[in-house]
Length: 398
Image (tube, rainbow, N blue to C red; front, side, top):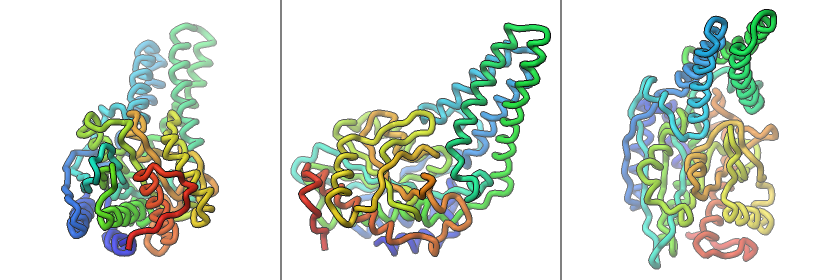
């Protein structure tokens, strides 16, 4: 199943968000779930065609605030605070009004259902996004390790713009002239960030996406196959959730939570997310989120730690935070649901390859994908039985 899904998805040149190829991939995945006799459907939704325009608007808003503050500091402060709120909404996935002001397209979530046995009262959601991104200078292999630092610098610059505009209101004379000159620093920074977003749209090329994220989709499909062959899980309904348009702001998962979040009991629902297992070391993500660190579910994390400690197959799996960018699991995590994510990270703590030309099948670490499937299967078994990870590995189905 892993090789079949990898080969089929990567036969497409890309699966860029809201593109015709993304739709072709969704149709393939739905048919594949049907072949496994898993009830599946495509759920359509509208998503931005790229995140670049949203962040271009944000950075441009801060730049306008810097310039406007020379003559109208009160207006400039209001502009800066307004865009800071919008920036917060984008980072926490709580709201994204700017998505209504940028080009949009049609995307789909692929959702399959495997009913549980013995009066199931819990829901396990196995998720991975199937769309791909495009290249950009910010994702150049020589720069990508600095994404987290760049995010901190952005926060500092936003803070300086707000404080600087407030100071412009309060001071006059030479002090005001000094502040105006100093505000050139965050102004230039925001201008550079605007150019970065424009560069991505002007020169970026959609990537094939073997690692990000055919690897995660293949893992979920393998787990779905095993659950189906087992006849379902005792006490757990299983949802296979393959999201579209993750690369444009977690749009697929956000739509899923808007449509289903109210009926999902956070205490009885567990999300296991698989994303970008292309190279480095397979890693259990203990904390995620760029703006605010959100921890993985303690119970799921303890189970993962126990498996790593007790099963020699998993001894090399790492556990660390991932805060360089956002994952699908951030959306349910921010809404109080139990989540755990697995991904491949290098020594710098970022995926490799990542939104670059070399994200192709020949550069994919297939052994990592198979290891992720085995580890995921053990996690599923522990959830089903409520057993202790130290009980030892379980036999996988034929």
